[in-house]
Length: 73
Image 1: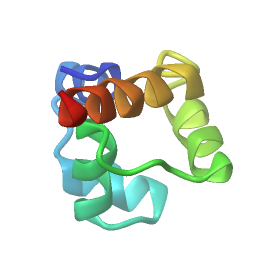
Image 2: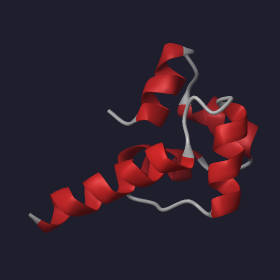
Image 3: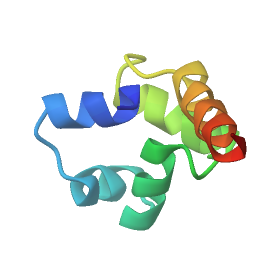
């Protein structure tokens, strides 16, 4: 489970609630959490701000890299 999804789940927030906080779609939240979407630097910054840096850009990129590696195996 991605660090972003873990953060959201620990706060009992739905993907829809987090999407509304960030001003993006629920589908984007789902793709970011599963590493299927590389967010913009601005969005990564917004996620860091929302999570008070409990989830960093590095955490998000790690999820994306791991998902890409798993897809190529």
